[in-house]
Length: 262
Image (tube, rainbow, N blue to C red; front, top):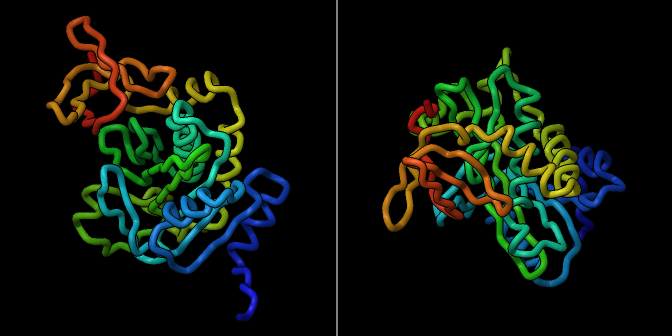
């Protein structure tokens, strides 16, 4: 078998991250799921690393939903982080989601925010749409955090995709093609910083970027919806909702933003 050849975009990311905790990077043309691939490696004791692909054929979203994107239209990557306990899970995911929101927001003319628990939203405050999602898998003392960012969509993207989501290039002045390698480096460098910050600093920064807080929301739960005002993110990452002076805390659920509170 001939030795594997580095792609130019992979070489760019490798060079930019050399000497950091995420200096091990592979970029492949296609795989089933970057999260599954790195989870298998994590079970076998693999060190911290990053896997990026142009195309996922079995990508997953939250709650078992299917996640798809045309080849090379998005930044699809997973990050293997070691030394993570279940109690650290939310904020390990939060560090990557926050990094993505900051990196995207530094490029666009529209605001980029976080929607609890792990969606990255882009657009004007009254019409934000999902630009990226994060999904994690705990494996022993490690966590694999996968993120899919819609980077460059064509003008003729299917109507159902455009209704539910958006892409970075649709929020640039010239709608240029987004350099995915440059975006990957930006996200990963920021993620390293957030992963290495103390919990309260990360929580405070995450909350400042969270568009869910202060909203009148409906939280969809298996036992039925909860309606109230999203007032805080607890130290463990749980969403706190207040209604008629009663505050409840929720670890999971799908949030619908109804309107700003007040």
